[in-house]
Image (cartoon, rainbow, N blue to C red; front, side, top):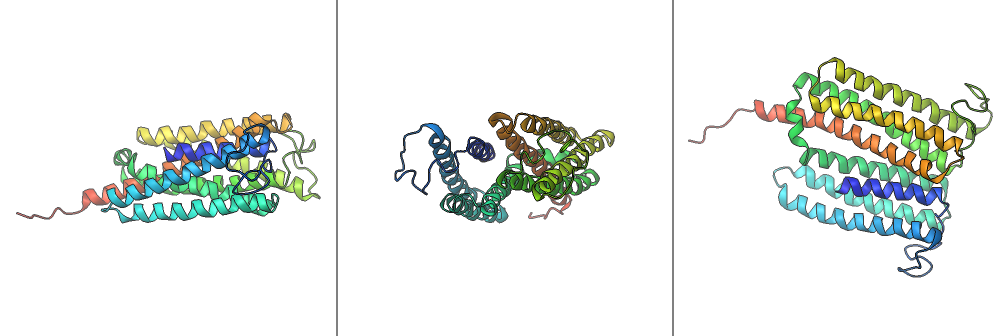
Length: 298
């Protein structure tokens, strides 16, 4: 549930930006001096984003309490949940600073990056608890490759998310107003830093696509377990959708729907890869537990 809620929050954040509603509530934590503003226009999106963020904090506090009570045999889960609480509070402070200082690019980018980090943390915990049974189907030699390839792909996608945040908050989204070319060239003139940033985002997108399609190809060729094939294939499908959304976003001059969906699918790709990688680590733990000697207490 927390994973879905976090994805919803990230999507709403992208809608807030795409609709130019980031300063519809010019104060923080109130909105026009009240906690119950009239929900019209940009205020609707900005205040809804804040309400969903508040709901996530409450949900995560409950999840942390449950982790403390129900997972005493795995103390790392409670510690990770506590780290999530700290990350959420940091995220809230960044959100407030974003409004108070009128959308400074560095703070706004850090706000999105910390949101993606929290999404990764939530996914690790969800994969390690609700989905851990799938890991037992992954043999040790395959699990090793899943961990290594999954981690490398996850880092590459996270870097792409940060680049995307910089493109958004430095207003470089239309630095190359055409697609797939940039200023009519395969390699544009790189004298303007906004063009450099947009072009770097596109180049890294190609690297991400190659990595994820390669990951799916590997999973199918090595006759990996079904769960490995499924999640690797999902990553490949989503990255193709993401490229299509990126093209549409540029060609429609940053229309709200493709622009916001572009962020949502990016978060979805990160979620899939973190889950994929976590399954590899869970398989390693399961293998170690199965190999551990059973003490005779008779």
